[in-house]
Image (cartoon, rainbow over all chains, first blue to last red; front, side):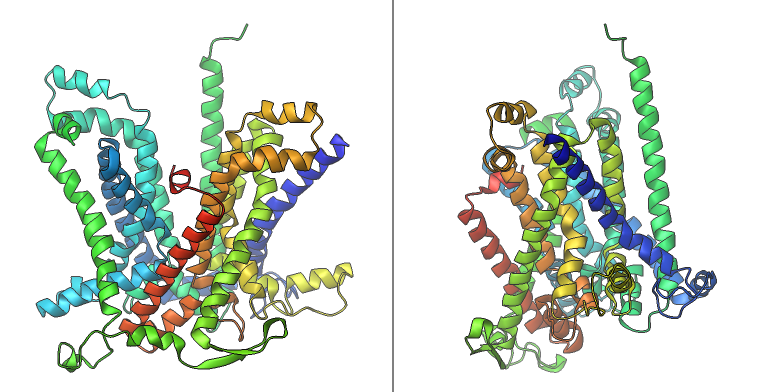
Length: 279
Length: 307
């Protein structure tokens, strides 16, 4: 009886993985089908023309460049704000900590549509009140950046905060006693300890920004990001160029995943080699 | 605070506080106050903003009750304002998505933490992460391809002889629910997985040795232990589903309308930002109330979730 349950559980896990991966394969497959409609049935023969058409799509390329700029700006701002917040949260306690921490976490749960509308309203109102045409106060991707940072910073904060738990504050005390300046303590002791979490936070922020639709849709003005552009293509005339784009994005993801996995395995082997032999 | 000053000095502490202020005040609190304030203002031509007509009222909120439609669930026929109906359906299907996500994710979470070989778990996690890195719009698009009337799913089922004629999947809210589950199931999987991982396996073995049937082990030992994880996963999936705009727009049918789509129409089509604000505030407020009620009903404390 126990054997059957074990087999069933392995089967379930396999089905689950297939369920997660299969839709991506179907989408990728449609990029190579010589059919005007994106699908894998009926199969009308191999082609790479959708990739050529994608490369010739200037609007998509512009949207792609925009996306990279927005994502980079969001990653930088979120890392700075998120790290500062984690340091602050880590050194306060009691009621104030609960309140500020709660406010920070709640930003993850606020629907993106609310963030988008509220960001747009605030900045355009300030612009109207000051009666200025300065670009900061009009719709555009800079407002998308600010809106996205408002919740992505919380994710960075959580990652950095987790890393801070394993930090030995005695190191800072020692450095201060030995005559280090405050800036040195920050730059030479605290930040190096946080680098892994900051790196992970930057990666998460970057990808979250690329994903974002809700905030961007309400703040972008006329500018496109990749997600917004793909959405408009899906709603209007779909050609498999979107699938070609998906193939490239999925490939980059899988490549990054494989590199990460190889690095992890190598580190595991190194750790195993360095550990004392077990008796 | 004293601690911060002593370790990093006045200069760095000021910078840290300013950065936190920038985030919480300028990016979060003040925009939301602006949204709340705007939601009571009428939609006026630019020249009349600030004029005698620009007074606070509940008019924007009352628009929710305009335009009634007839619905007849379970044989009872009654009239209900169309936006209220949209809102209830959004809530209802978000709950359905949350429950189904839990049903799908729980066995997998248990498998990953208690059954799978611990050495293969990192690889498993990596595989599961792949769809998470692919953007939401592409994931919804993938299901749009799969569920098409002449698409791969119908072809497969026909070839297997499971159905006689192609099924229309993108109808009513069906495809929206399927798409939302696929998009957000991982937000349920990981909190539940983390919660079950911290359960001592000896407890399960002890119950087995004492002769407890498998369902009782889950009901009395694993589930109570995983409750905080289930709670945070559910809150996450529910809020993401109710706030999703992409999936309902791509996978919605002619008869489905999500509340976020209504907000989007007020904002981007009607250009009435103030009414959009009122609707957005309603969404945020009522979702929060609903989540709080659900947590109270299931006896979950806020501190369990925000760990």
